[in-house]
Image (cartoon, rainbow, N blue to C red; front, side, top):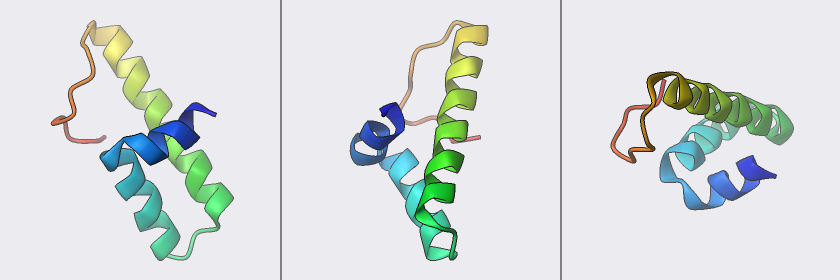
Amino acid sequence: MPIILAKKCNPKIKAFYDRLVVQGKPKMVALIAAMRKLITILNVMIREGKEWNQNTKLI
């Protein structure tokens, strides 16, 4: 559920998801890839003790 909200509200996650769909990936595969990217970003934030920064480049 968090990735569905992130896809709607976060322009970087939405762009990543849309790029995968345009490349021909099935929507569920693109959704799982975006979820994995969000989890990776959150893990790095926790590890480094940083807050979300909208200007940060996605991994």
